[in-house]
Length: 179
Image (tube, rainbow, N blue to C red; front, side, top):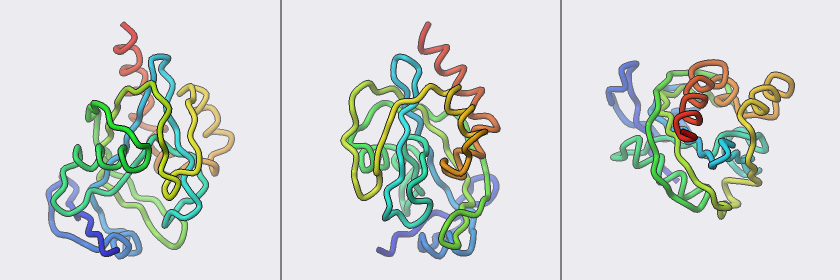
């Protein structure tokens, strides 16, 4: 598969395209999405990454994530990823963006201009076993506490985001949706 990701500058301006694996091996800054789906109880739908994914297998992570591909907006990427990995789609709201850079498995680096989306869904997902090994609902505060104790069981990007703006945005989102 010769999928091309969108390379961006620190302002999220597109500056070119690069083959996905090459971008991750070189650590090029590229546009990506991360989706967080909550139920009416305020629980987050988590996924455990499948054994065959190209990096970070077996770890628990947010509902889904992906790179933005050639000709695709961040919102289009978020909906594509949600349907592909979890087997459903729902209304998504872009909450914030964040740049991060971190090494991941297989000698790769995630260097992403990340668009973070939140949504609501109540039903059981129909997971794509090539991408997702397992899934569960978790209380966000319990997740935050467990990441402090068992960080290696979670994706590098989730560990980074939970220390920053993510926690505040989740609290506001859950509070707003419950009123």
